[in-house]
Amino acid sequence: MAEQSAFNPPVGVAEDLGRGVRRILAPNPSPMTFRGTNTYLLGDRDVAVIDPGPLNEAHLEAILGSVGQGQRISHIFVTHAHLDHSPLAEVLGRATGAPVLAYGGPDAGRSAVMETLAQSGLAGGGEGVDAGFAPDRTLADGEVVEAAGWRLRAHWTPGHFGNHMCFEVDEMLFTGDLVMGWASSMVSPPDGDLTDFMASCRRLRSLEAKVMHSGHGAPIEDPARRVDWLIAHREGREADILRALEAGAATAQELAEAIYTETPPALIPAATRNVLAHLIDLARKNRVHSLEALSRTSRFSLGSGAV
Image (cartoon, rainbow, N blue to C red; front, side):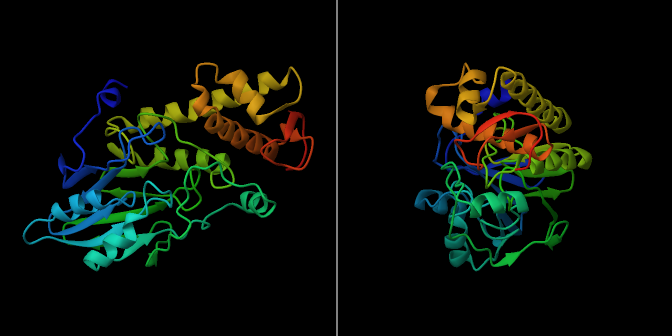
């Protein structure tokens, strides 16, 4: 984690990461975004922009100013429709004429269970959904996009968000918020789905990438180790929740406060959403059940039962 702690690049500067990739840090640091959103530029002639970032004029100018003589922005790829990743895509597209490509809008890719929960009134936890996001072209799972100097394969990787995609170029993976080096990914129902998250992590593990470039933080130089840690971390949280429920039924917030004892109070709501994601996953596996209609305040106990 030393390289993640030391990660503090200048804002708005296109830094060369090698292998035809540059990174521009957006000016939106926060407890949820670390130093800010990483926008990536791929290619030396036809330039692909991956995750343009938040709606910010200075960041737009930094992206446009990074395009040199003989270059053009030819494609705009978005990993997912959160406000720190996607809003600038439409503006950048208008400025350059480049199409915006993604899996779909903010509701695309949502699992049947999460769609049912959303329809029942379970709302997201305030992570900042870009409700108006609409790509110019949708990408199918496994679809390949090529331009001068690069070839990109899109992988649908729901979990952090239903429409989340990771982008594979050579032996690199651009992982958005699914896999990050500085923190574990937020999984907040109904936009996030822990069952899908675990499956997506295992899928990325099988791709055997040499480096991962995430939406926040430094490059991940040992991807296999990081993905293994994320899977083990989630399995450990599941065990924590099951142990805590041995004392009796509890809500997601009560469990979060009991388990996340070193977490700042301001982040307990986010931790609560993570616990809720685990509880829904455990209910789908018939290991816990909700004592009333499922909501963020439901009480859960050990034992089988339908979501």
